[in-house]
Amino acid sequence: MKTVLEHASLPETVRRVIRGQILNNELPSGSRLVEANLAADLGVSRATIREAMRELAGEGLVEITPRRHSVVTRMSAEDAEDVCFARYVLEAGLVGSVSSRDRRELDRPLTAVMDEMDQAAASGDLQALVEADIRFHGLLVEASGRRRAIELWRTINGQMGALMRGSIDRQHLPLEAVRERHEPVRMAVIEGTPRQIERAIHAHYITDSHLVPPQTSAAV
Image (cartoon, rainbow, N blue to C red; front, side, top):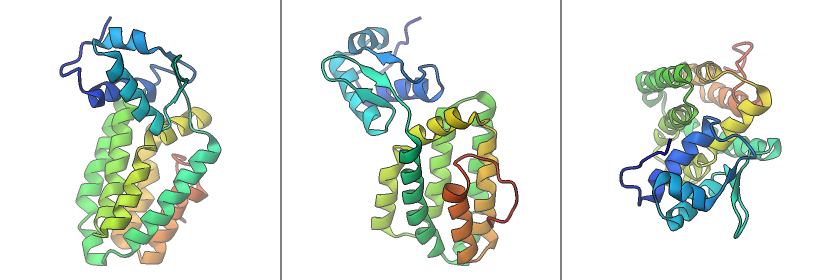
């Protein structure tokens, strides 16, 4: 069955549809994405598909072969480590600069986002889970108010989908593990010292593999 899009001339709408199919493994790694076929299926121009493919390539979700087709790809373990390290460095520094009073005020919104993670996991919607993950960490860094550093952090967000899809594929992890992985960070931010926050974020991104459920509370 063909997918019919409203406002199909918008490459962003097309990108989101294809991105969701990739993240939710409807288009598994190695799938060929032929420009003409996608244009016909989605009822948009080939130019629109081409622009959407460029955005998806920037996210690390597809690899483009000029004048041929695109292929769904997965982020390598090495690239995933680099992304995690960059996020750890920026995030730990930004969150550590937030006052304890302002950090305590994050408890309710962080918990609400974690509830969204549970809902996305229950429905098997990785795209929604990725968006909830970005909102969770966005709440942390934006609380610092440090505009330039926040902008740097945001440049890495586009690769979170590729990071999480690749991690799940390599480690065969359940989506339900995502909330568990964020709970030590939430607790450290709300109740901990800057050093405890740094350790929790380090465990989240570096010490443990991404999305692996924590074995102990030592990270906090």
